[in-house]
Length: 280
Image 1 (spheres, rainbow, N blue to C red):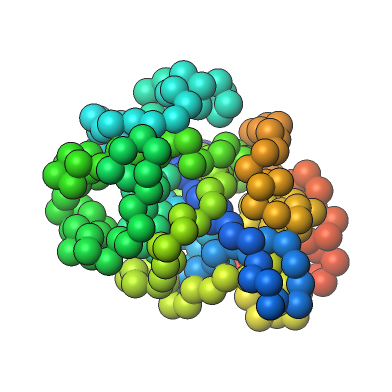
Image 2 (image 1 turned 90 degrees about the vertical axis):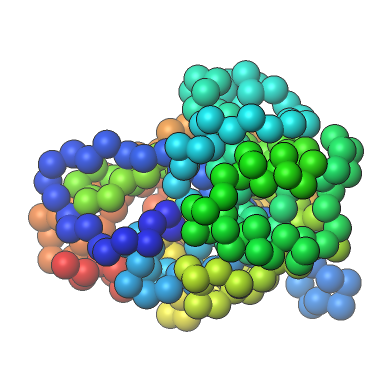
């Protein structure tokens, strides 16, 4: 979900979590789709990645130092508002929002920005070269937005959840989840080195696919899909104001199968141990 390096070994020593942002892109299901409601954009990570390799996730990644230093034109709720919703300080909140917009653009080509505070880019294909430069860290997101005279649309994001990787993992992330409606005209794609496959699915369909063994979902992804399955439209999701407790699952390693304990976990273990449970 956040790195391109080799898998770090699990260690009993506590590793400080790195800040990360994940964006749940949503859209209303097409009229000709049998199941009404919303659809979410999901990626299956390339196997062998340092975190969540081979697993199905939402777009997102680690906060880059340049996100904290970014000087961008900003539309929407203030940095202080974001800090309050995510129970953090203003500097970190700014970095998290910038990372959310940057990572979404890098990973699926969706850009939550426009030429003014009330517009959104309609076609991002003209920025394909910049997208590659961003992914390769050859260009900062701040410089990209300035060069293209774009305004970051923080108002298109909503704060949604906060999960921290369990103590005991070799790589840990303090991840803030956002939701955002896919902008009209933009096409979410899989043109990234980190994804093997991408698709839009209803939360219910994604959960059914997982339950049938077609995908691997980590607890945070499963939990967000489970919660979103209760919403009937994008408008309902964007109007929601969820509580955002910090969720720190507990890693259980003294049993035959590895597992984690977290709030609302019962449905996650109905099918028994998961594919990641026996990894080294």
